[in-house]
Length: 359
Ligand SMILES: Cc1ncc(COP(=O)(O)O)c(C=O)c1O
Image (cartoon, rainbow, N blue to C red; front, top):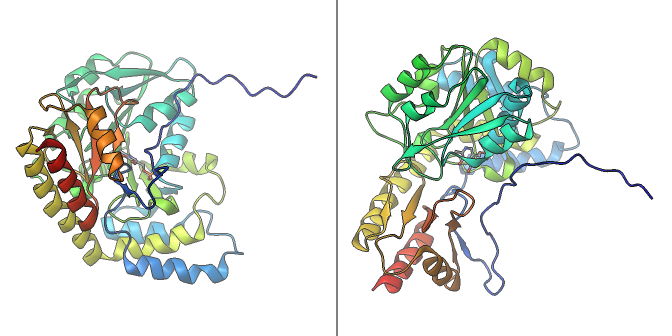
């Protein structure tokens, strides 16, 4: 019998962090850069209210949420598109732009979903080397060819936790050909409070050849609802609407998202929590010669080259205590683990375990 045959896919599969452990109930999951405090209570209330109307389709173009976003960031609502996670915006972008033989540039340890979507649409993915785990504008520019269609960059980047400064980003856009789309993934921008950093949206909201993505999965704590958005020229966004699935963002995500983005007090609380713990954890890591990035987001990439125990041993020891970190195998970063800043109890527990492992 000849059976239906899916086409051959030659693409890497996204490997999520572990979330369950065989012998331990309720492990401490610090492997997915989720929010430490969860969403604003107002977002939860909005989510609960929505349950009475889930038999109705959501808005097909997320217009209420786009209005709220447009007011908050002072941008044109017609240039915003919402998606089921910023993930869907990467998907739509690649679907819209990539033609056979096109090249997409990503950085050596850039966020993996960018390259996965690029290869899904059959682009040739070109890796630009990093310098000490930081993207390099020169190396990106060296990789540009006649076939380059898109350059993806997460700023700050996951999992390296490094960032390009405002002037480096401006330099990159200026030196790239005008017909190359620069996609800036702003997923962690809210955590980064440095004078030499500006978010992609603030830098490039008036440009026509930049697409910026934002997510509700990080500081807003709505990863489970899948909500994100993209911002670009009216022309690009209009074309995206043509290929977007009709009801791509669900009712609960839209309602909770509108409350989450408006609750500045909660956002500030989440920011302060992250800052406080990042400082504490950074100094503990330092004590044990675990090298890491300066604090830029809600995670640390920890290198174990100068420690007595390697990343594999540390990973296993933490697992025994019920703490799950993210291995860096898929990112091909040897002897390293990524740690998400968690809630008070999880962070205390992590610190206690690190002390006992390295004492
Ligand atoms: C750099 C970066 N961009 C985007 C995302 C995914 O966002 P979303 O949940 O909106 O798809 C992540 C999630 O870890 C990320 O690290």
